[in-house]
Length: 258
Image 1 (spheres, rainbow, N blue to C red):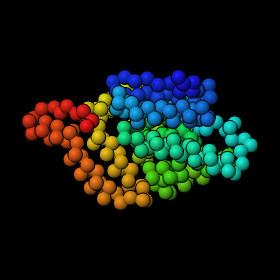
Image 2 (image 1 turned 90 degrees about the horizontal axis):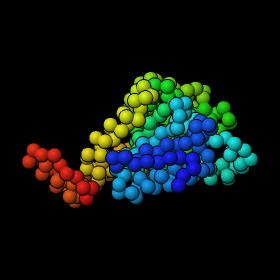
Image 3 (image 1 turned 90 degrees about the vertical axis):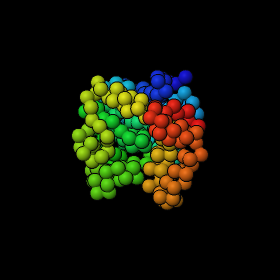
Image 4 (image 1 turned 30 degrees about the horizontal axis):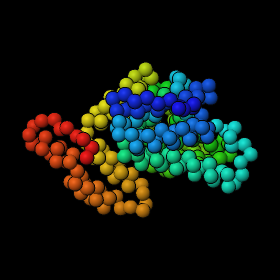
């Protein structure tokens, strides 16, 4: 089905692997199109409750965009390229099912932007993050200027964007860019263990937690009002009735996502 990524489903968890190890898993048009299709599956496939995005091999998550595709592009084509990347990454960010980045090496440029679009990140101890676009006479275009600032703060974000320097895994943990740093051989198991726990929770409530948290950074919304609305919506779900009943009856809930 895919030529530049691979996908597999196990225990309601969709594993998406960017599969261009000879190119350090660089994002080209094919990768973006196939990633977009895989994210659509997360939204629409009822057999999927959560997802992991990672890279093939031991060196790179995604080492950046495929720069060979940038040559010859003009002003309007650059705008279209950035808009395409942003649209796909916003779809990841707004997914009602959690998507975790398992960062197994270099996450630079578009790769860092992809990781930051995920709901949170787990890094292998060899992971490196960065937005080095300034070295190409460019700036991040797939949301990096916004999400890096949200995640590590304005001063740090500007420093790393204008120097092009990389952030190692332990510094990323200190900055709050990643939730955990683990040995590479434990990376996928760590991500899976968290999502297997999440998959036992009420799916509609999980999605609303994501939506409410995203509202913090949406200037068209009042986050507190959004929380009130989403909290109220939970009371119209069968899962809320099941969850509260199970709590009072001292048993495990059986959530159905309704």
